[in-house]
Image (cartoon, rainbow, N blue to C red; front, side, top):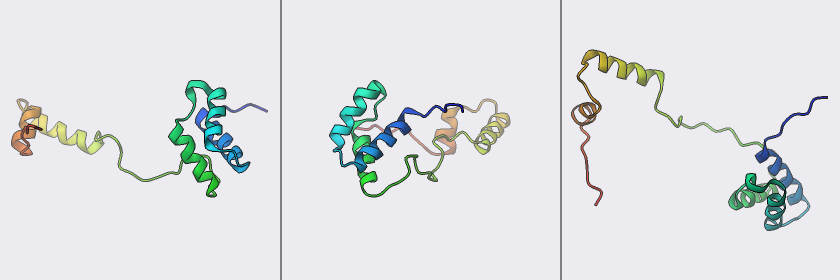
Length: 110
């Protein structure tokens, strides 16, 4: 039987779930996790949040999947749009696009 590597965050959540079921307080769980995992320990806020979720009846230790917009704006459509702009006018620069095409201007934050 081969041994699978469990990510440290998942391993810690399993420990939190087990100790929360036994009624151990989150501060004590954090102390035990720090002794075991050192610098890879979850933050205090994350330990307390996971403890609360497990006490409230959560069963899964994995993150919930969620739909959100990608963190980057580099998409195939955006790349094609920029390529068409640049190929259409080789002298076009970023500042031209921002100021002339999109109407953005520099504003002082003060």
